[in-house]
Image (cartoon, rainbow, N blue to C red; front, side, top):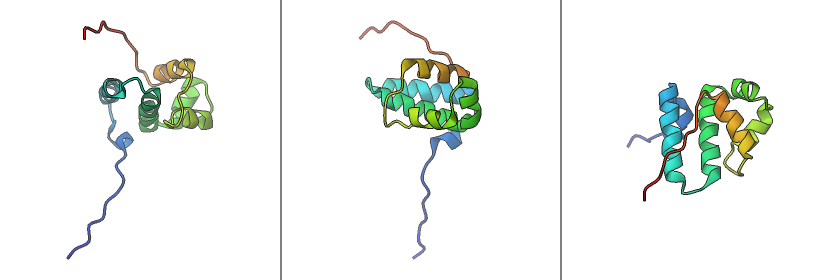
Length: 99
């Protein structure tokens, strides 16, 4: 019987366009149920897809602090989130929720 080899799935390898990145972040917002660390991790995935060094530079942060902030192990400050979203070329928006 042939042995099956698997590799770890990395969503960052599949986020190629700004539209895919925005759709991924939007889906994470919907699934997060208020978990800010999940949003931070999603932003980290997108940052890796775009290139962490460039995103860190554009956000005015060190690469190391960006990795830590977007690891999903903690919730970064909202100012960091805003800097990263801007550096990624994304825009946050609000919409009325009727639930």
